[in-house]
Each structure stands twice: as structure tokens, then as C-alpha cells.
Length: 359
Image (cartoon, rainbow, N blue to C red):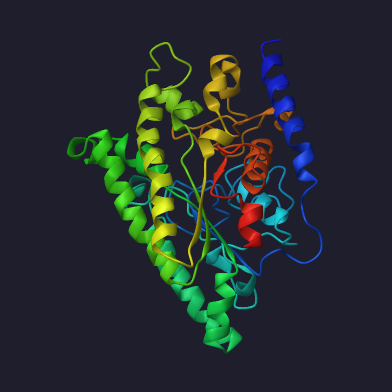
């Protein structure tokens, strides 16, 4: 009986989004291509060949994914996969690690688990493609695309019509600032100073992306990582359902992110940046009422990832977290749906992804 409130919440969450899912377009994709940047929330296999503990190329990951184990940190699709389906792409965007010239015209997934805005974030886990490295990889792809299309002017115009998703920054907290034994940042910066340093570097990186031809760029804020099962297990919640000090640190970053997006749009006439508010879309404070939703579906290691070959929960559609850090396919549907078509003015600003695609 203890799991019934969790099941009720999850069922209600899914039902809430069913009407919106009918808005998915059929026929030709709404934009010519789709590029994904970020961390394990969007990684679709780029870390599989790297020397790192941050990989998901084993069961029980992918248990509900059409192609099985792929390197995605969930039981099924990532929210970025689902947004791609909403945009009308018939196939999932392939990872940079395995992309061919034949496929690059529809987009590339550069996401890399444990990657951050700062190059050192996640380094204790092993190799990864930091956001700066992902931008270098994208520069390589744009050059290859110009060669394939044999017309640089056409390629430049082509890239301006595509959708770009960027979700990065979580590891700058989980796998950097919150690990004082591995990284010095918490001794060097206060919470406010660190948020400001991250935003300044992020601003430069987003302008690099803009300089590579991107115009329609959806930038995701950070989720309330103090409510993830792994961070709750690592830190004292002091009687609260979540680690409020972590959520407060993330809020300092998010509070600076929307003004950054507004400034980038104001300063660049062709820019169509938009802010996607993860905190509005996934209000994990609900754990105050239903704390059982913080239970991972799979058995987890100390780092929050699934134990290889372990048996996950049976009714995965009723889970919010698949492992200790990452959402289930069900939760990713919720994230993707409200990112694509906002249900609240707080979800996206100045426009949701469906609107972004039409610009």
C-alpha cells in the first residue's frame, strides 16, 4: 500500500499530458534539423566508447527502448528524443560518436554524461565531452555539412532554421561544487559567486553556438537536484523532503539564466533563444506530500547509476526516477510535452519549442 500514492501521482501526471500529445505533427519535420547539447539527460551513447564510469550501455538501461540498450540513462526515451518526435523526425537523432555524413543533415546529438559548463566537471568519473568540447564537435559537423551540401551559403541558411537544445550545468553542481574532496570550487567561490562564474562562461559558450549559425536555441534551466534520490542519500535533508541547500544553489543559477537569455535576444537581432523552466515543469517539491516518488526504479550504485544487470521495478510507467538521478520514460514524456507546448506561462519564455519551430 505504501506505493499507492506514488502510483496515483504518476497516473495523474501522465493523464494531464495526454491532450497535449495529440499536437504532435505528422508528415515532414517542422524544422530541417535538430541538434542536442548537454549531459546525461540527453546523452544517447556518446560516452559508450569513453573511459568513464558515467555510461549506461548495459541493462537495465534501455529495457523499454525500441533498440534496447543504447547509452541512454533511462528505461526508454530521453525527453530530447520525445521532443524530436514532436517535431516530426521519424528517427532518433544519432550521437556524434557514431554519426556519418549521410545522417548529419538531420542533426547530431552531442550530449555526454558527467559533462558540464566547466571543463573539469565530472572529471573524477573519467572522460567526457564538456560543453566546450561539444561546441568544437559541432564546429566539425558544420564544416562537414558544408562539404556534403557543397554550398556554404545554403548551409548557413539551413542551420538557422534548425532547433538546438542545450541542457548543461547539473554536473557543475553534482560532480563539482558539491564534491569538495574532488574539486576546490566550493572553497574558492560562495554559492552566488559560483552561479555568476557559471553564467558568465555559459554566456560565452552560447554565443559560440550562435556564431556557428544557431538561431533557434532552447536553453533548459536546471532541475531541483536536491530532490533526486542520490543527493537525498548523500546529504542531510534536515527533516525536509529535499536537500534545500542544493535547491537554493541551483536557484541562484536559474535566476540568472532567464535574464541571460533575454540579454542574448536583445543584443543579437537574429537570436531566438528561449528559456525552458525545468523547475516549473517538474516541481519536485511534491515529495513533501508523496515522499515515496524519490525511490529509484532500478537498484542503484553509490553514484546513482543502475547496478549492471539488476532487475528494475515491474511497473516502470509509474516511476518518476529510473535511477538515482535520471527521469523515467514517463517523466520524460511530461518534460518533453510541456517544453514543446507550455501549459503555463512559467514553463517557457519567451516561447515554447513548438512556437520556436515556427519562427
